[in-house]
Amino acid sequence: MKKLLALVLCLSMVFGLVACGSGNEQPQSTQGQSSNAQAGAATQIGTPEEPVTVKVVNKDLFPTEEDVINLCAAINEKMAEQGMYVDVQFVEPPASDYATAMPLAVMNGETEADIIYFQGGDKPLADQGLLEDLTPYIENSTYVKQLMDESNVKKMESYPYLLWLAPPRINTPVVRTDWVEGLASYETLLADPTVENYKAFFKELKEANGAKYAMTIYGNFDKLDSIFNHAFGVTGTVIEENGEWIFSKASQAEKEKLAFYAELYAEGLLDPDFLTLTWDVVEQRFYDGETAIIAGTAGGTIQVYDTKMTSLYGEDAALTVLPPAKGVSQSYTSVDVTKESRGFAINVDSEVKDAAWAVLEFMASPEGRILDKVGIEGVQYNVVDNQIVFTDKFDSWWARFWDTTNNFNPQNPSLAEPVLTPAAEDSLAKVNEYMVMDTNLLIPEELTPQWDAMTNLYNEYASDIVRGVKPIDSFDEFVQKWNEAGGNEFHDLLQETFG
Image (cartoon, rainbow, N blue to C red; front, side):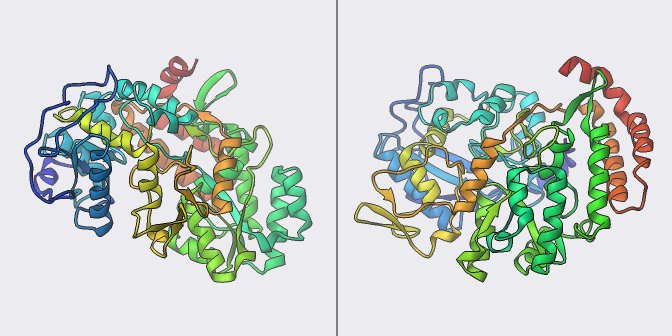
């Protein structure tokens, strides 16, 4: 849980506002603005003469950007056709660290936004009653409910303040298809993806294609963990060991996994620079063929990798998604359903909550989905013979609201070609196939310093063990220090929460 900065940061924030509709400020109509969450969506919002202004803030969206201006205009126009007269406006996001500055602005009543995108720092606001409970809105929705997968439902049950209709942010490993064709170890891996078979595959893949390393990661082991966690029994943030619930980072399963990573490192299969690398360097090493495997977020990120690789080396270099390793269990990283880590909230002080929800609901509707996923007609796509045909500007478009591909199959007009590449689609399918839910523990504020100290200890020992700086036996020393740093203080809370 990130700590808020001093109040002086908030006082320095300046919010700009650009109207994305007609460009003229209109007085807000109160028609349809009494809360309709319990009774269903409002049948009419605003009037043509007095559309209801709905202000949105998102760290990646700026009111002067052409795509944002076009998006707002399209939303206003299409919602008006349905009798919902809104004037969607994006306010300038904070110039300082968004995850810290945005919650502070809400806490001090210094933002006018009705819909707020959070990427951290939202829980203290929810605890203070500053974020709207979205449960009744979702229950009475038509389209939002249709886009929710099992993990979305679980997250909203646990924490009903943040909605993010997107695939789980799970890392999936990919490799060039032309690099694995004909490899005996690859066929063995597909038939039986054990840890041992994965290691054999790493070795042959590296040697057969002249790569320096089988896999490159950066900063931490998250991307490697997505392949191997479950195989070693690291099946969640908290697991049961010897009859007690403990954090998996201090488990014997974690020790066995780190010992395996140390083998990969010692045998030159894992990039030795992982501690100091950045994401862009890792991606470039993958494109240059220095590393054979990269892991990225299922869906969008895999789409980028796939498109880039085929543009460089042709269709034969299209990516193949690899399965998670099999052992104690088999899954990519478990999906944390304790709460959304990012997403949209409605400001509890908003005077236009129904209109704000109507915008979110519209963007989940079939018409809103085409707008969100495909872009603006005449810019990102054209309609030819009742089919959506992408222009050369489509590749730079991305969904500003709901990134999920659930139930996205436009029929009138239909898609002339899929939105996602086969590898991107397969990554999402595999995440769903192997999905395992993970209920985490929301760290209490009073235990945050201890958790930070425990996390730092893990990072230090894990990186030293994998690099051979410390022997694997030092893991037992780490567990002792972990417990002294705060693990013992979490003991009763873990038993009460998970027992």
